Length: 188
Image (tube, rainbow, N blue to C red; front, side):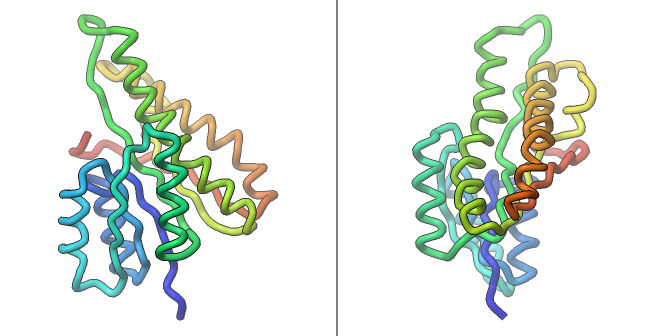
């Protein structure tokens, strides 16, 4: 059986780390991306005894050009992507007392624009092949405004809405698109 290839962003810790480990345990080749190479090294060393493999691809999702080059490198080095789990993002906690346009923009840049930067090159390649699955991690916060999370909730609502808008066209072009709304976890 040919091993399948997955790309997981935000794989350095938290949900992304665990998703990457579970994919490796199931025999997948996993391209793991995080801004911190040390965290990816830890993932790779902790996954050596599993049936799949981890291939670290450090990168910053807020750089559009870097994500285009990174996806090309992944596919050149380990094969066409069967699955992309776009998980990278963060929670910047602030409320009324420290609300600012700059902090709001920073949250949107990471969670929305960073996701779009990752999605664009993957979507283009999968659309050309007419196959592949993309899972984009949003949050339960997309559905309801929560204290200290005005920017975070707005960013996740934007991701959810984007996925809902793209889904019919993805289906028509042979690309699966899922949006995941995990509950609260102990990670940024």
